[in-house]
Length: 274
Image 1 (tube, helix red, strand yellow):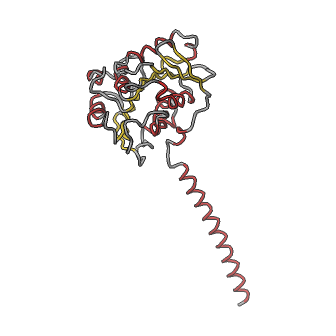
Image 2: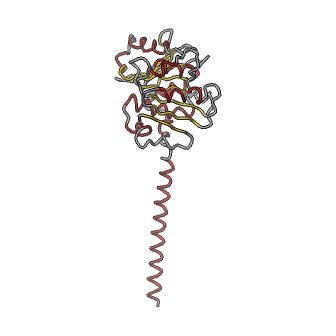
């Protein structure tokens, strides 16, 4: 009987230790799963480059890595009505920290897209043109500048676009441009946007353009979500550029195939061609 008691006690002790170890493993797994539950989280963080800002002639403001290497992709930016590059300065710096040269048109009326394209011309004649990969050019902008992004997207030099809450009911935007796109598009909306609402401004774009499109609507976002550091659009746009302009396979997995960004709780997503 005593022997049986000792064996039982030993077995119970062993089982308790095993149970504790299993609980620890499950807890660790839960913590890791929790830390990795948001696939956009890595792109919220600044990239590896320190950045600098300077004028790009009279027409552009340049945000770029302070120490340029080779083959940096380029992004041209268009402001919303009445805005300037500094209106979105923290977001533009964020993109630059990931290795992109960002050229923001100084105009507050970017609806035609012309001033955005002029920044490409400026950089092609700049002293650091040799550090830029002009075969990888993105175009993005907010509101009127989002409409200008679609206008700029007709240019064969543009290889990806990301219009943010684009306004397409005038202010320089031409509906015909929506049928003349040739580059993949990240189309961003805000569910509470009352100035460039999704129904009248982004839904028609999604249905008309004949290119791959990832249309993501941020729940609860007003028209001013992008002001400053791009708000909750920051990570999504950064990942898009890394996918489209840098060929990053991890970033690509957010938008293609099983699409890890498609099930995010704060977003409603539609896509075609991806």
